[in-house]
Length: 269
Length: 347
Ligand SMILES: Cc1cc2nc3c(=O)[nH]c(=O)nc-3n(C[C@H](O)[C@H](O)[C@H](O)COP(=O)(O)OP(=O)(O)OC[C@H]3O[C@@H](n4cnc5c(N)ncnc54)[C@H](O)[C@@H]3O)c2cc1C
Ligand SMILES: Cc1cc2nc3c(=O)[nH]c(=O)nc-3n(C[C@H](O)[C@H](O)[C@H](O)COP(=O)(O)OP(=O)(O)OC[C@H]3O[C@@H](n4cnc5c(N)ncnc54)[C@H](O)[C@@H]3O)c2cc1C
Image 1 (cartoon, rainbow over the protein chains, first blue to last red):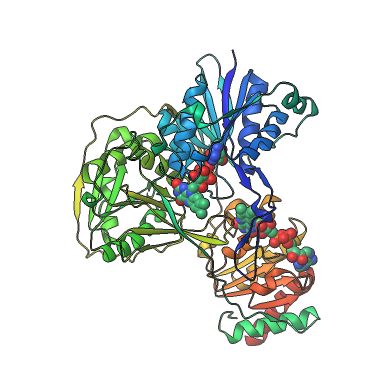
Image 2 (cartoon, helix red, strand yellow; image 1 turned 60 degrees about the vertical axis):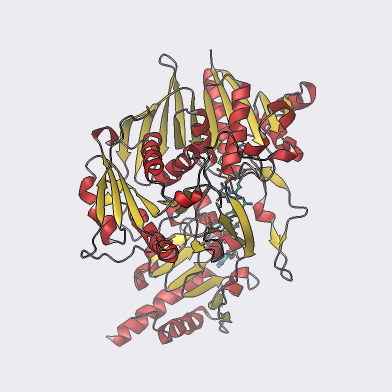
C-alpha cells in the first residue's frame, strides 16, 4: 500500500507579464496568460517523488475558472493520476477562509487520503493562509516550509525536514497530515508525452461544480468571506531626481557620484 | 439565501474591545517582529480610544511579561505552562483562540515571521474570522470605525484596502521590520493577567531534532544604512566580490535582486523587493539591476538610489536619483579607487 496524496494548486496570472497602462494607471491584464503558481510546482514535485518512491496516487485539485483545465492537464502530464477542477460562479470572490472551506469540503468528498501537499504561497496574493486554514477545517496535523519528506511505512508516519530562519528542524508527523513545500525546494520535472496522452485517452480530469459539492451559499464565494477588499489604489510613484552622469570615463563618473553623495552628507570619508 | 454560514458562530462585534499583539518568544526573549506590531497597536488604540494587550504563550515566559508593557502595551496575558515548552503551531493557536473567546479582543496582530505565518491563519480559521496578510499600513475608517488593513499584492503595483466588517477579532500580520519597535520606557505601568488553559490538543507532530545553522553576524539588510545591491547584470557570483570591495570601503551591506537570489549568488534573506525585504538605507546602490516594479517596491523608502547599468534604457534610471551608464566592472572599481584617494588626501 502506498500513499494517497492530494496536491492543491492555484491558477494565477503570470504577474511577470502584467503591465501598467502609463496613461490611466491601470493594470493591463488582457492577454496575460495564466500559469500554475510556480511555488505549487514544488508541492507537485514533492508529491510525485513520494509516489515514485512509495507507490500510491497523486490527485491534484484547484478551485479556479474553467480555463484552469490547462494547468491540470500540465499536472497530469507531469505524472499526477487524476485532477479535480472545482469551478462554479458561486465560488468566485472567495477570500482565504471561503477558499479553504471549499477545498476542505472537496477533500472530504474525495474521502481517503494520507497526505495533502500545498505550495508555500502564491505569486499573486501571497498570503500563505490556505494550508493552515485547510488543516484547521480538517483538524489534521500540519507543517509549513518542508524541504524533504520521507515515509516511515512501519509506523505510517512521515518524517519531514524544514528550514527556518535559524535552524533545520526534523519532525515526525502523524498521518493524515498537511505539509507545505518550501518554495524553490524541488526541481519540478517536465511533462512527458506518455502522461500527456492520458489527458486525451482517459479523461482523468473531473469538474466539480457546486451542483456536485452542494455547499451552503453563505459559506462560499463572497458571502462566505469575512474580509472585503474595499478599495484598490495604485501605488504612488516615488519621485526621484533622475540625474544621469554626463561623464563616460569610469573614474570621472565615479568622482561625479562621490561628490554628489558627499555634498548631501550621505557619504563620509 | 440570507443569514450566515452555519459553521460560523453568531457574534456581536460591539462586544469586542482592545487591540492584541501576539508575542512570539524565542531563546533570547520576545521576537522583535512582535514588539514592532505594538507600534501599530498603539496607533489603532489611540484612534479607537481603546487599550493594547500583549499575549505571551510558552513555558518560562512569565519573566518577559513586563517587556510588552515597556514598549506600549497596557496589559499582558500570560499562559505559562510546561506543556507549552515546545512550539507547535496547532497547540499555540488553540491557546490564543481560547483567550480570544474569553476576552473578545477587537483585533489580533501577529508579526509575519515564518512561525507567525504558519500559526496566525490557523487562529483566524478556528475563530471563523478574516485575516489579512503582510500589511504595510493600517488606518481606521472615520465613518464606520472599521480597521482598514492595507497590503500590496500582485507584484507591488497596487495597494489593497481590506476590511473585516462583520467578524471579530480582525486579524492581520505584517512582515518583520516594516514597522519600528516603540521606544522602551521602564516607567510604563500595566497589568499582567495570568491565564490557564485546561485542555490542549495533540499537535500530531513531534520535533525530533533541531540543527541550528550558523548565520554570519551581519547587519540584516532591512537595517543597513548603506546597501550595495547586485542583480543579474553582474553575470556571475564572482561579480559580488567586486561589490564587496565597495561595500567594505563605505561600510555597506550586500543585498540583491530576485534574479541574483534565483541564480544562487546570494541567499534569500538578502533579497530586496516585494517578495524579499523592504529596505530603508540612506544610500541604495542598484548595480546590474534593471529596476522591475517588484524590486523598486522594496526601495521606496531609500533616501537616495544610485544605479550603475550598461543599458541607458533600463527602467532603473527612472527610479534612481543618480545614474551612471556603464559597465559595473569598470565603474565599481573606479568608485573604490576614488574614495580611497580622497580618504588618503583627507588624512
Ligand atoms: C487584492 C487582493 C488581496 C487579497 N488579500 C487577501 C487577504 O489578505 N486575506 C484573505 O483572506 N484573502 C485575500 N485575498 C483573497 C485570496 O487571494 C484568495 O482567497 C485566494 O483564493 C487564496 O489566497 P492566496 O492566493 O493568498 O493563497 P495562499 O494561501 O498563498 O496559497 C497557499 C497554497 O494553497 C494552495 N492554494 C491556494 N489557492 C488555491 C486554490 N484556489 N485551489 C487549490 N489550491 C490552492 C496552493 O498550494 C498554494 O500554494 C485577496 C484578494 C485580492 C484580489
Ligand atoms: C510576483 C513577483 C514577485 C517578485 N518579487 C521580486 C522581488 O522581491 N525582488 C526582485 O528583485 N525581483 C522580484 N521579482 C522579479 C522581477 O520582476 C525581475 O525579474 C527582477 O527584479 C529582475 O532582476 P535583475 O534586475 O537582477 O535582472 P534583469 O532584469 O535581468 O536585469 C539585469 C540588468 O543588468 C544590466 N547589466 C547587464 N550587464 C551589465 C554590466 N556589465 N554592468 C552594468 N549593468 C549590466 C542590464 O542592462 C539589466 O538592466 C518578482 C517577480 C514577480 C512576478
